[in-house]
Length: 164
Length: 261
Image: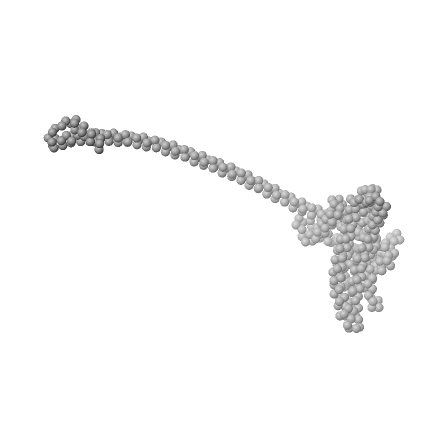
């Protein structure tokens, strides 16, 4: 086994070159180059984290804006609904009022017309009476030759009309 | 592979040969094939890391790979230790990358170039021992630095009944002291065993083909070759797992030192 057989002649050289090599690796590579590599990784990770944070902030802002927009939309809708309701109520009230007025007018007109009608009927009735009594007097005179007074004729007509 | 009188020595791959002789204060610190592969490992790690240094916000494939490895170690540290684990990322990253690349380097088929032999740095317990000692020392230093002598409470877990106080600390201390050995030996043995197995199977294939009896090649070489493909896959997996285990255990040990129990 050369490791043991050559131990005494080679240990100094092995240790010396080992320390030299390892020293260069440690001080030259691991302490000089490695931190730069790590710094690059850290820098990249930091950049990624920053970008992610920025994106997250932007998303939150957008969400907030959306929420605000929603609120405004709801408010506007409520307002519009209230206005519409008010307008509807107003219109209904106006219609009712004009309807009432028209009703009143119609009722008045009807009352007048009815009164006129009644008057006309009464006058007509009166003229019918007088015509009937004259006719009755004429008829009596022609048929019996008896002349009757217009008052008696009118009395007889009235009695008949009251019955009929 | 040294072929002496037709034999293939599966241990030859672990031998260290000096390439350039150096001497420092009487110590032989020659530049060896082992040192060469350590520098190769260093170069590969450097190229890998340098390729991911573009620092783009939208990473390319290479940068993605580098960031993946660094993120992997980072996650391991923060999940084992917590936010304080960040401090120890460079150390565990160095450990992980060195072991991983050294393991993979040992699997590279450089041997197809004649005269070139792949060397697995982590198959030597001198190397794995240093790595383990380093992580053990970090645990000790951090533990005593942060908790002073209170660090010894690590050996008395919460809820220990008073009548076991004579036994539990001894067991805990023992398991604590064994950590560097288990770290070093696990890696060293896994790498060495795998490479010996592969080399033995490769020997079967080659010797089977060279055998005088014609029935040996289909009966020995072919099954060995098929088995070798599977073993190679397994070894590649072991390379990554061993690096991960070493790094993970180190992070857990550091967690002991940072947070006690």
